[in-house]
Length: 167
Image (cartoon, rainbow, N blue to C red):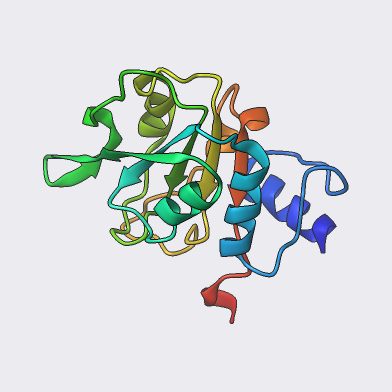
């Protein structure tokens, strides 16, 4: 199963991963998110969470010992965008990027994904990306995994699942 996941990720995102060392199979994306956060967060850390967000992210951060720091995405020309979000004043050791976003359906562009580390002043933080809705996109939009961007592969934990489309 891990070999198949590795092949799929390389085929769709252009990122080669070692199925023995870099893929963990969990019983669901919620559990994978929680396990990832518990593994990288230290008590007292802050985790940046973009709003609007999936309802579990804040409680997951708290249960992991962190303080959630919510960053509101702003509207620009009718679309939610990270390009004009309010940047926190100090870097956080981790953030959560959900693309395509639940609940809005917002798909972050390559430009936005590249901007997020710069805007958060946290180039070295670990990005936890919830990409479970990668195939639920419209209008010719293409899902881009944060792990596929230059310099992000080793600082991104990608959460995905056998999604509702295949059930």
